[in-house]
Length: 293
Ligand SMILES: CC(C)(COP(=O)(O)OP(=O)(O)OC[C@H]1O[C@@H](n2cnc3c(N)ncnc32)[C@H](O)[C@@H]1OP(=O)(O)O)[C@@H](O)C(=O)NCCC(=O)NCCS
Image (cartoon, rainbow, N blue to C red; front, side, top):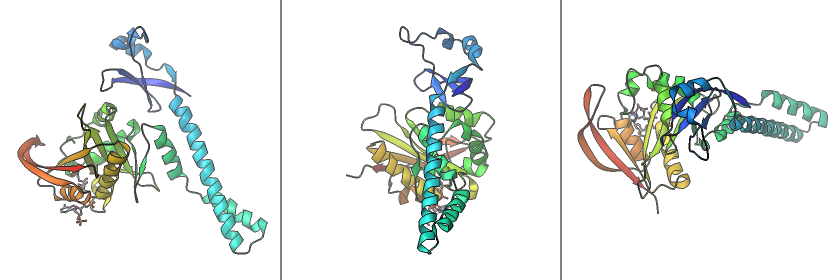
């Protein structure tokens, strides 16, 4: 599927990446003699490519994946209703009517979301009440709305306040291959309620990553923070193969401390005045979790 180039950014390794209108990205490396794209090195050259269409294979793949997911969801809804109606002793015609009703009423959003998540970097993670899907540029507005709340920002070292236009896009665009950052979504509505991630330390061996998380104010106190942290711990050890995960929280943030304790982290120390955030010095509590043997 053809998609227009809407912008460019540098990835964590200094290569230019074209941003497409669909939200997908494509590397535009200039690595002579294999790939000669001298235009990508100048601002003028990049500007001249804005609006040009590229083939977006990820859109094609996503379209097929969504079609297949919808087909499977409808078949399974119809078969289930047909079977249930059979148990009630209905004739074949009655059973098919039930099956058709089930198709009309089928909730397709979760299946579509899962299919789309697989089309982006990495797959989605499912926990009991959440879908954690890789964060995308399209999430920028939700990020700004949720993290732009002062109460959220003042508890998390990485969140600026005020959260100005463009900051969310810049943050999401800066996420590189070592950043496994997920939108926390409610499965039925697909609504994003926060974000959480593991950022691997560059070149560090044995492999380790830092865990962080935040939720929109309206979603605090319902166990979502704990659920997301636990899901990412499993993902970190089982999928990424990390040897350890570390995390920090402000000393005055008992909710975050408790999330870490409930996810199995061990307290390893306190650092006074470790950083300055939104106008005040903050003491930090440091935690670690090592890979279970
Ligand atoms: C920290 C945060 C992620 C916690 O998520 P949450 O979904 O509200 O937490 P949970 O509902 O899973 O609760 C976890 C535990 O913390 C406790 N807790 C939550 N908020 C608390 C508070 N303000 N004071 C004391 N304990 C608190 C809960 O009671 C629960 O413990 P329990 O099961 O022993 O009762 C959420 O409050 C948040 O996003 N805050 C703003 C950003 C932030 O602080 N991010 C972390 C940066 S390190």
